[in-house]
Length: 69
Image 1 (tube, rainbow, N blue to C red):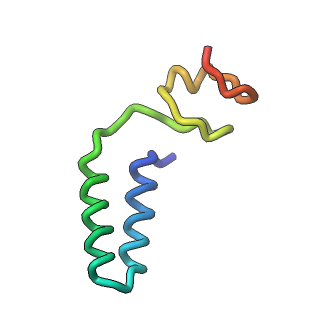
Image 2 (cartoon, rainbow, N blue to C red; image 1 turned 120 degrees about the vertical axis):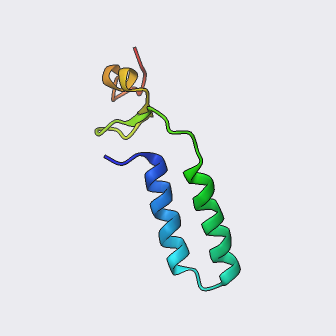
Image 3 (cartoon, rainbow, N blue to C red; image 1 turned 90 degrees about the vertical axis):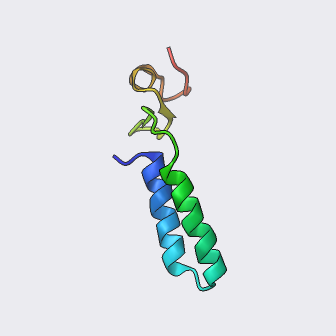
């Protein structure tokens, strides 16, 4: 399972590859650098409902009401 930061970096990389305009590509590459500098979080994504949270909370949350206990 990839993290949200990894997914964001992947999407930005694809956008940079597809960018036609050099200035647009420069902005996207600058965004990739900013994403790389983001603090790494211990958040995970629930494989069932895709909610993101701390591992302990995700392990104990209610999928139907999206609440934590």
